[in-house]
Image 1 (cartoon, helix red, strand yellow):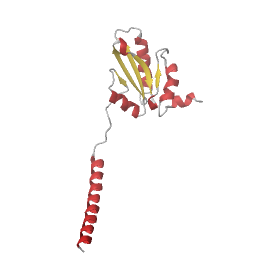
Image 2 (tube, helix red, strand yellow):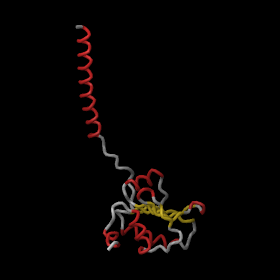
Image 3 (cartoon, helix red, strand yellow):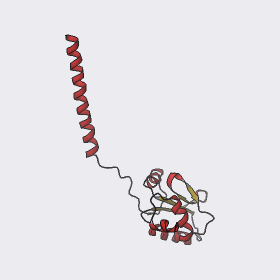
Image 4 (spheres, one colour):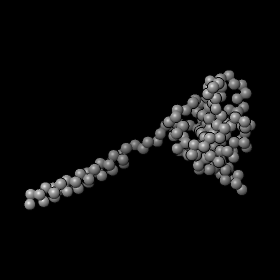
Length: 149
């Protein structure tokens, strides 16, 4: 009899603790503030941290990295074209634009699944960027859908 009483007490404690555990888990998750990640505008005039780049890509946006050398006078036209493109597709693109040392320069577009398109040998215009952008973006804007027609 004593063994059965101990076993029923053990089962009862397990049941009560599981009820309490689920209640605490539910309260913990429903009252916790949602982790929205860092606030990143569509044009960033500095280099992004790795965490910020990952956040941008996880949100389904395309990251355009325009890291040009210091004192680059020929980069101004490209920068203007990139800014115009990023403003036009502000919900779909984040432009990372900054002057960096010569050995750290990059001009690339990064999209879904981490696919990278190098933009070094491309004339930077909206017409040139749009097909590559449409290939990389997760949720496509109407301009991408119209390209397929």
